[in-house]
Length: 372
Image 1 (spheres, helix red, strand yellow):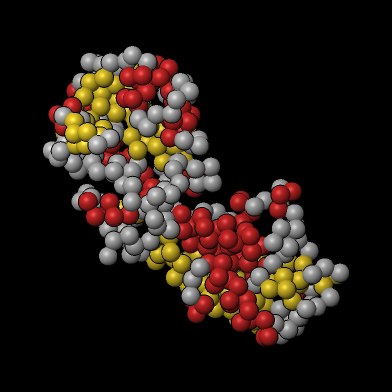
Image 2 (tube, rainbow, N blue to C red):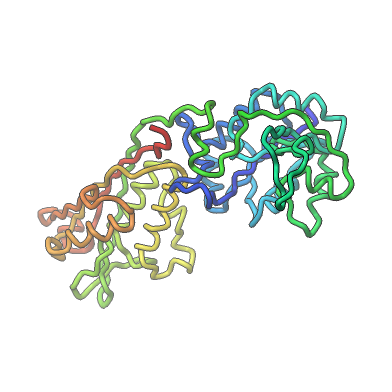
């Protein structure tokens, strides 16, 4: 068993990236970037464990893709790394940022080759341009552009990261406690994705798949007297509402399930359980917004959605346009991509007996096409 673990840091918010999808969820073919990089690194060598840090609201979804060890990230890169290091049981660890997406095998092998020669093995690039620091020209031969992955001795790295100072990489933290650093040649191919324009500099990533994903959602709620009715995000003028833990908006609940189904993320009960008092009487538009943000964060775009409301009562014709507008605004999509249909069941079943409302929703999604 190799005395080496791999940590990939994937809990960032991509605040500087400038796209609706987080960079760690950009699709390479059909795989998210974090998974593509993990498999790439596994092709280079073997590890006792592969640990991926993730945002709190994405970690459950990540586990659907692979059987790695997943750890909730912290407020900073350093905190995320410390969390992940608690899972490491080996002497050595390789740490890399998901944003460093095109690490080639030659660069990786140069790092591994020197693993016993220092507390931290660091790839770097030389600088060919003139360098000015605070209006003074400095010797460019003394300047190094530091890259990841970096290979460190685990105990030294843990000690280094416990300092109060915040460090942007492992080598600077280890150097601050007097650890020794071995610099090795990096690679211009290992360009870091910080801004969307950086994607143009990467040649190793396949274009995202053009697959289409279909999700189906169905929900039903019985009527409850003396309660406001909300349906499709719109208040319906009648003397009754829905019996439910939330506001009971059965149309939005079915829509949420169709969206989650399309991305393979479970169902509304998993995300917003009715045993949680935080969701007591909550406005379902808030839940839909959370789900819409989630599916965009993890790499999808909404193509369209079709919602069929089955209700003997109340009459809904006058509300359909407003429902369409409200839902399109929440999903941040064109209004014509949201279709609302209302029908009766010809007095058959519980709907026909005017006991409640049932809704079926179908949504289609595609991967965010980050490259033409």
